Image (cartoon, rainbow, N blue to C red; front, side, top):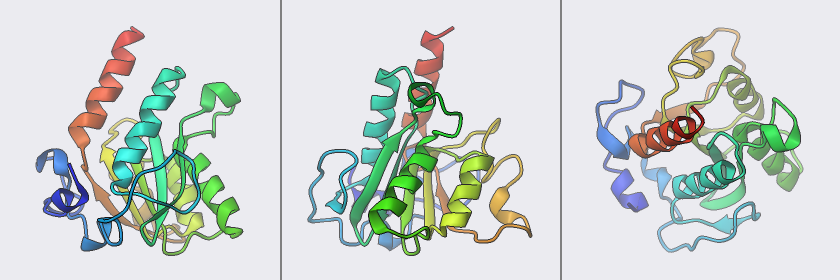
Length: 193
């Protein structure tokens, strides 16, 4: 599935009724990416045809390491700044979620604690900790694949970005390749039961 196909997807922030393509992805989802090529995960300023595919690559790599399969990518102006998968076990760090790792890497790459004009692509709805980091980093948009009714904090639980104490609320687009992400997570946890 290419970026252009994702653009035809449904509506912003609603229940998962629009299938695998997601909801309300703006035209900027693919801006500057149509004629680009993929490259190695984690590379700075790398053109990327489909950032969510890159996030899925990171999620699969995390699963291969025995980590919960969640991957994240940060893009600015059609260029990948950073990509990461969960590393909580490898780093023995409960904060080593894919979103936090990719935010740290993108901030280091830019030499700035703010990621203004940057977009985050992640395979699962961010938790409260990651939503806080997203807000403080001032990310412009968050695209996530599968909802997380138990641990998610964007469209579930505390709905972090809707709180009056939230410093910055990015635009949020959910459900992009939702069934693929949900299947990956179910398979991962099914193997461990």
